[in-house]
Image (cartoon, rainbow, N blue to C red; front, side):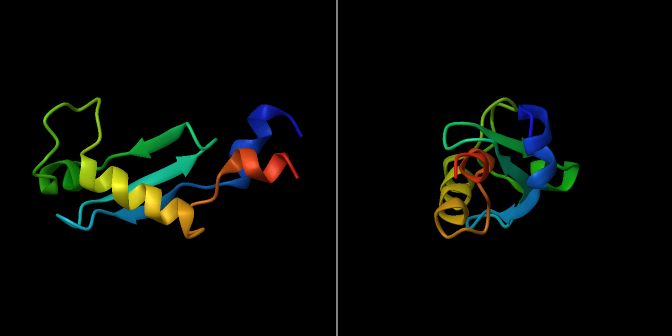
Length: 81
């Protein structure tokens, strides 16, 4: 399996913010790297998104919790076993 093939094993997963319920799609390539796809509806719903290149703290927390509970898979963990 090549590094590029790893992305095929982990599709984007919906994660909702606990504060505003904005739902984004998330994939974690490693514990350090997170890909987030924002929809127009999620951007409109998020009251803390001032910089479009950042992620609001409440959503970041929801993504971290989803990763720790296994709702979001860390792709790097799939290839290291």
